[in-house]
Amino acid sequence: MSRFLDLSTTLDLLGYDFVQHALLAAAVLGLVSGALAPLVVARQMSFAVHGTAELAFTGGAAALLLGWSVGAGALAGAVVAALLLGLLGQRDGERDSVIGVVLSSGLGLGVLLLWLYPGRAANKFSLLVGQIVGVDSTDLALLAGSALVVLVVLAVIYRPLLFSSVDPAVAVARGVPTRFLSPLFAVLVGVATALGVQTVGALLVLALMVTPGAAAVRVTANPALATVLAVVFAEVAAVGGILLSLAPGVPVSAFVTGISFLIYLVCRGIAAARARRPRT
Image (cartoon, rainbow, N blue to C red; front, side):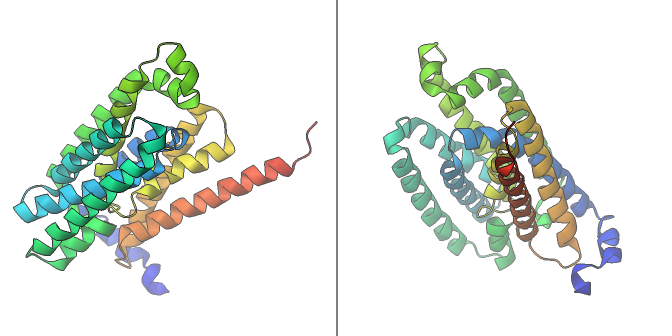
């Protein structure tokens, strides 16, 4: 047990540049994923996020094989996936099948690229479950710039996007350009998903892209408050997960997903307690 509670080791590790880079990356990722998560839940895009993460993994694997920046490769793969899902999955009836096709093909290609990679197995493993040493100053700059673009675009389209998410039929009738907003939002989600691949890993990035939003909407119906809560939840999970993982050296995603799931259970408990409370 002392291995998991070694405070002195954690404090010593906080002095290293790679740990500080990872914490900054986690803070940025928590902000972006928290801002998007309630809309992902409202638009029922959890499966799409998973599909996008698989293509981000494929892009990262291709970059690893070619000796390029893994962050840039993951970003390119996620954007391609988002465009495919946004353009091919316009109709509700075919969206799930399109996601399944893109997900399976991307995952298969990524596995092949990893098999071809002659380097260390740790680099391959980190693409799936994350690794804090995978974020350097170059990746951090790319992450911060991408996050800024996502937040600015989201701020510009937030009102019509929220309207089309809550009541798409009425939004179409009122002239909201939903055919434009859907692919654009898919790209924003793809970029945010790619940002989490190096820290959380492609397999478990849902813990930040979906779970904080799912927890927030359990305790409030106010969109603005739900966004604030989702950001707080995502920050606690991302930054807290890295801090807890330092001393034992466990993959970051194990703690990030654990914290996210605990927050979700607490929010479900609060919602259940409110439902049992007698109405006046």
